[in-house]
Length: 230
Picture (tube, one colour):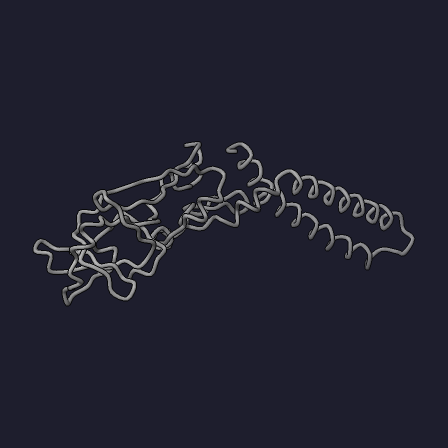
């Protein structure tokens, strides 16, 4: 995959733009020759034949390249600054703005990573060490703070278990570390899919909540959720 990516990226970001540039220059030169040479002159005929051959050759090469590397375009649709912190334009590496990268990485990109062939998916699980307070209008509340004087809430997929409360989700990592040299994120954050709440704890919850309720990220900072939690 890595070798394919290098070749395909070179084709679409360097070779094809150069071909378009050459064709544009050739077209300008051809128009110049057309207007400033005699109608049946040898120069006009040579230029016409040369342009035809150039366009045919470029079209055939472009068709071959797209047929060979077209999968790169499909993969490219799933890449944004959160997935890759740099891009190539005409063979030049352009580094993305760090703030933009950070903003993208703070949202749920699991669907993007799931579709990218250079990443492998892993299931992750982590215990929740915050007491469960109860549920109100589809929001599940957990205590936070040294004296549990605050709460944070979560609205998303929830199930109940006999085990200690825990979160379950996914993480993605590169299956070839060489992609990291190209700016790809080596290991993603944990993407939350389901919170499992201890059934006994849920039965004992009084559904009483503190006045100050914080965003989900205030209680669980190292997991990202696609649910509405703030």
